[in-house]
Image (cartoon, rainbow, N blue to C red; front, side, top):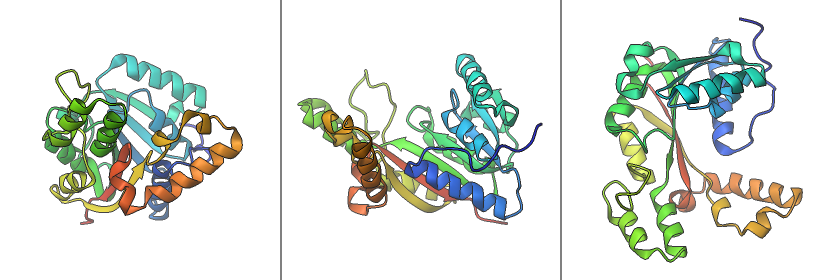
Length: 252
């Protein structure tokens, strides 16, 4: 491998990226000069490439050869390909491709919505984390979907999203489930992970009129600042388009 990527390189300023940047710095402060990251279902590598840019060695496990090929191209274009390892596999057999307790940070972003067995997926990610390591989960929010369908006049779908046990709106729904904050916390608590952060991602941006979002740099900055404030506001958490949790495996 070549020199460690510059950890001051540009990354997104969104709440999830900020939380992950803090976690990477925490791992480095513990003496892990190159934190080990496992990105489960990481697809084409949006998160993996950003974390490699922060100085991490990232293994991406995904069952799609096309996604892994796109990941390789993306990492090479960003100059971090030596720090990103693609592995074909899925969360159902995660232990076969990723060592137990081997990662300082495990990502499951956009994963729990599509897996067959959500409890098994969370257990597998928890097992892959090193003692004292963290698990980052990003999921689609149920209540944001309810509000979106209601505002669009799709009241039957909104009712289904609100009442269905898995937060789905029907047989054509592309997602197996959506979660609320309490459900996400319960999943992580249930495998012995301690939830340290539960925040919204995309809390208000989805409700801002397009003419405002397209209002130039000043509008972009104002919206980013508003999102930053809203992400940790408990009263707004369950209307976020996505819910983000950072949970920790207890140290031995």
